[in-house]
Amino acid sequence: MQLNKIKPAEGSTHAKRRVGRGIGCGLGKTCGRGHKGQKSRSGGFHKVGFEGGQMPLQRRLPKRGFISLTRYDSAQVRLSDLEKMAVDVIDLLSLKQAGVVPAAARIVKVVMSGEIKRSVKLQGLLLTKGARAAIQAAGGSIVE
Image (tube, rainbow, N blue to C red):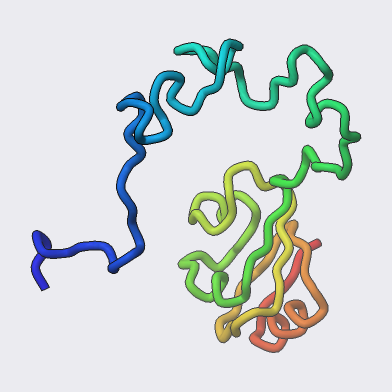
């Protein structure tokens, strides 16, 4: 295969419509635009969703749902992430400095995903029951 020999599949493309080439082609004179009006003129188009001054559909329909303003405030950390960290005392600041959680995070919860084999001390973090049991089984401690 050579790049200069690549072509679309047979029958997948068709010739471009050539307008304004006489009455024989069916698209002469007005070129398929009809007579008069904004859409027949060059540059005669309006913004998407404009309905001639009528209230547009996207503004008539009711808005649904809810987007929390605090959705970036919380983060989750796996046990395998804690295993990779070099420090023994892990808190919110050390997690941010290591790049494990985003800088905007204010609440961090440790979840039981992966495994931890070394002893670590957790300060000021939330834990699931499984994560708490795994950290204590590895000889770690938790400070609320």
